[in-house]
Amino acid sequence: MSDKRIFFLVHETARKLAAAQCMLAPAGYSVEIKEPSRTLEQNAYQFPYLEGFAQQLKWPVNGEMVNLTKLEYKDILTAAFEKETNPRLAAGFDGGVVMLGRRTSGYGKKKFSEWMEWLMAAAALKGVEPVFKDGQHKKWSGVE
Image (cartoon, rainbow, N blue to C red; front, side):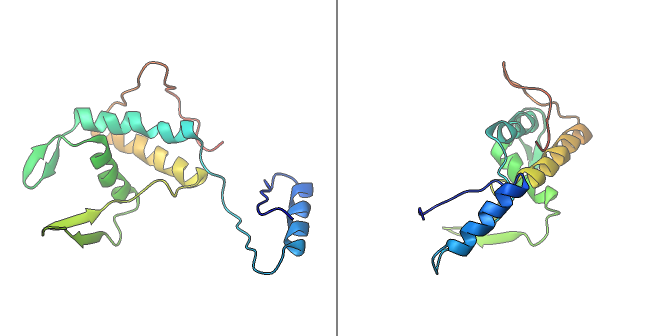
């Protein structure tokens, strides 16, 4: 048996083959069943919205209304998407406080699709238009 085998559980035969390989695997091997990863195109679709926030909306930071980068907005928006439960605050390296951001990198297709629907609604609520560059798709395809 080779070191790694990947089965896409798209039909009954694939499921049977995966189960058979589990039965043949040597002791100590592991099995992981997970949701499919999102596509690069799906991942890229969030950035026109984040860029829209960065270009069109100021945010209160340390008592001042300032422009933020798209990644700073991503931290704020993903925390809101996750209902801001259990925020993680860390001591800064030289003092102060740092709020640790949420990451979308662990989202599978379904959760990422939920994030994108939420992000589009948040943008509409704040009057933010996405900033698409030439050649970018303007239609969200959701979970594929």
